Amino acid sequence: MKFAAWYGIIVGVLMLAQWGFFLATGNVPEVQTEPIRLGFHLAAEALTAAGLLISGIGLLTGRRWSIFTFFVSVGMVIYSEIVSPGYFAQQGQWAMVGMFAALLLGAAISSLKLRKYLHMS
Image (cartoon, rainbow, N blue to C red; front, top):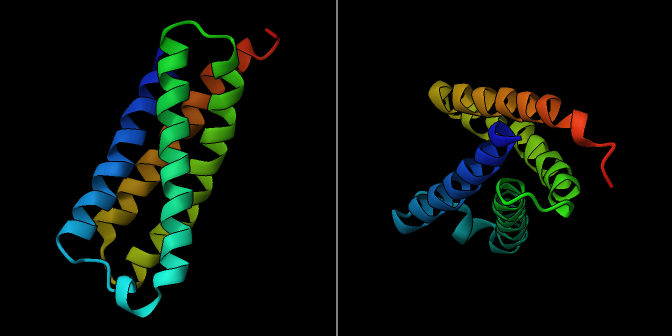
């Protein structure tokens, strides 16, 4: 359970930090070109990060609801980890593509490790 908890906490923090960095440095051209679409995208990313953080903390503190919350949040982040690399691949930023692949592997491992606790309700 600890692996999944720390995965959720670390990835949640990294998502917020990455978006904060990109926005602060002006590396999001969509702010000017697609502000509405970007706003919806950022809302989804923020909800995903918050869900990962909350469920990760819940897992560490033994909250029963956190298992369900983690699976919802990890499902959200898996979607992001599959879709987002396309943006960076289009720009030839292969290190970022590799990072998303590693994060996707972490999501799979977290889910597999946590699945044995699903019988608890």
